[in-house]
Amino acid sequence: MDLQYILELIGTYFFAVSGALAVQDREHDVFGAGFTGFVTAIGGGSLRDMLLGSYPLAWIADIGFLYTILAGILSTLFFFKFLSRLRKTLLFFDSMGIALFTVLGVEKALNLGVRWEIAAIMGMFSAVMGGVIRDTLTNATPVLFRKEIYATACLAGAFMYLILRNFGVERDINLLVSFFLIIAIRLIAVRYKLSLPKLGWKK
Amino acid sequence: MDLQYILELIGTYFFAVSGALAVQDREHDVFGAGFTGFVTAIGGGSLRDMLLGSYPLAWIADIGFLYTILAGILSTLFFFKFLSRLRKTLLFFDSMGIALFTVLGVEKALNLGVRWEIAAIMGMFSAVMGGVIRDTLTNATPVLFRKEIYATACLAGAFMYLILRNFGVERDINLLVSFFLIIAIRLIAVRYKLSLPKLGWKK
Amino acid sequence: MDLQYILELIGTYFFAVSGALAVQDREHDVFGAGFTGFVTAIGGGSLRDMLLGSYPLAWIADIGFLYTILAGILSTLFFFKFLSRLRKTLLFFDSMGIALFTVLGVEKALNLGVRWEIAAIMGMFSAVMGGVIRDTLTNATPVLFRKEIYATACLAGAFMYLILRNFGVERDINLLVSFFLIIAIRLIAVRYKLSLPKLGWKK
Image (spheres, rainbow over the protein chains, first blue to last red):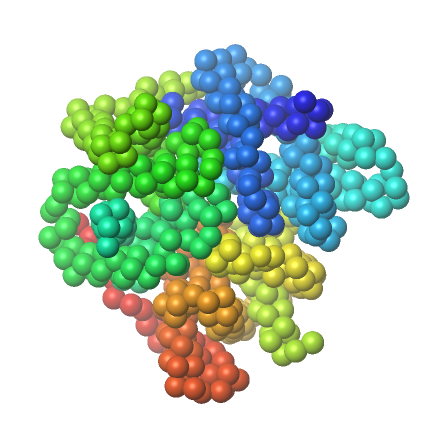
């Protein structure tokens, strides 16, 4: 098993946990938590691949993703008291998840032959759309409308990856730099409560 | 016309009715009711086939589905007073719809060559995702978060089908047994107000 | 560049504006406005093409769409005070957008070999689904449930196009007639506050 595959599974695991935890304040049963964890974990990548017409979808072709999601859901159900105290740890791993999915999503789109602008969008979609679907299902305002700099961090990392690639930087170094740029932007934004300017056009 | 095709049309008809009826307490016009009936009827199967990359979609390839949906919508509009008194009848037919779509969805996924775990999920998706889309459009909490054991019944039936198939049970018998298992679980859950445990992790 | 391509870009531009403007009363940042503008502009056409299995999607194959959307979002952000005074102008261009996307969507579906009933639905989906996704993301009641005759106007135009085509009317004339029928129905409905009958089955 190569490193990329392991990292994808880790990202999938934490997306599943974040989805299953998302229903914690609502009147959902255990199945609802599992369902939400599942669609959070597969949503972003599935949408990216369906938009690109890239079949079969990763989680359908490789059963490892499904069992990773199941592990994420079960560990949430059994350890939710522990996990809910880990709010900051979760923030860190959620950031790792979106950072990882962004750079892997950009790469996958480029390998399918699309232009770099489209690849950047596909990277961002991979990272944030699972959360958007999760929030839509639970009737919450989607995360990318309320959180400190979130999808913007993904876009910034996607562009960094594309720029470094254009300058011929080696893939592994490029992945690492872009990955940590996203995490850094995200964590600094949360730490200092930074956000993009509001529109200020309320009537 | 074979029995399976007729059953698919019947399931589609009742999904269309349940969708068109879903807007009854809101300020929707007749088109809104029809639109909701339509997406409820095609949503689950379409999502399953788009995830699997199986084209053309059934309702696009066979015009019989569209006219069946139209019949479901029109009969809802003309007979809604009668239908709304039939709440229990509708529950029964909705259960028939999800039971049927589950087992047919599992079969279709298996025929496309996916693993049994994926097939079980695809069967459940076929059955419940039309309702999830319906509820998202009408800003209601999705049915699988609020109803008595619902999607779980579909999953149970899907696993029953896969187990019996694995033991070499004849297809027709297998379809019948799995179909009635889903209906039985669903009706018993509603009758005795059974539900899965709540998470109980509200703060 | 042919006329059809230019019209598609114009329609895309105004969908992007309408999406970015949709968040004006909420607590969104500039990225949220841009994201909403983007999904509004690509949503309807993408869903149509994913349902039909027609790849690559137009906005992925032709980068002109992405920059058109970007222009729409940026002009919204810079000129929102001007644009928000242009409510009637926007209504007119939104109507132009749905009218254009309807007839082009019907044509595209017919060219892919589907039946005329399916083509009519695909035309309507192209026109209205971007707005439905926009409204779902912003937790608003979808436009086609609350506005004066909206999707119904698209369906009427789609059927007009199909009827005229069946009678051998030349394509350019057909496009124009169907296009203006949709605009006329929509503007008359708004002017005289016409709507389809409510269901009247509230309990």
